[in-house]
Length: 283
Image 1 (cartoon, one colour):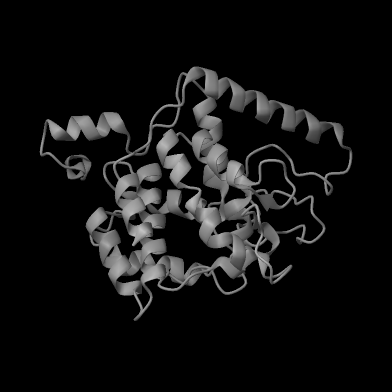
Image 2 (spheres, one colour):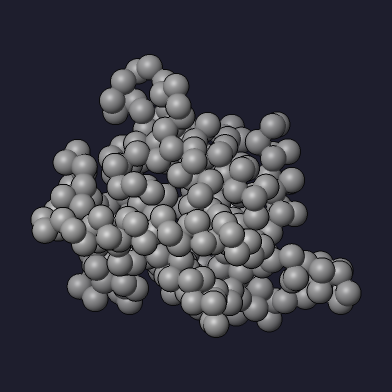
């Protein structure tokens, strides 16, 4: 399958540091958007440029609790309190028009620190998920492969965890059950082998597309989040509600500290001199 081949190729293109020139361009873009938002006196017409604050607990409806800040939506087609799934993808809505173009996906991944080749591979997201979200607006495919944020729930695929419901809301009890079942170490984290066990559990019959999408999502999540070879519960929760991506952007802009998690080229080359695999960084 083309999709599987692409995943194999992408699997060996981990996180790298964006060049200083490209980082300057991204930072100038973000600054101009922040100025635009600040000039508008109506907060419901434009989203705030501040990253979503980290939610420590989830409410019964799956939204972050009062300690977090929901990013408002400019497009009237989306509720001013978006679903968790909408919040998850808002980082890639670069100009806040509730549309995610292929370039939005590419630039978003670059801003998170992914390599150029990996970010180009991310365009598969638009190829596969544009039409499902387009169906809420038209039966005709979008010629520009754009993704529509207001109907992002239509892009849900099979063989997933079910933590997002059919409307895009988060199911906190399923999130907790995931760690209860697969966190064998009791550390509040998941190893690579435990993630593979999760993937096997979620597979349903005759759904190779869902299997591939789920693998791609968890593999990308591990590359972005891993610390000591594991994906930690608090980080993953922020990934589900979208606040993680704003946090990574903010930390990467801090040149002294930066984003310390993830798996990059340095980790890959260092592992070759130890056990020869990525497992050298596991607990």
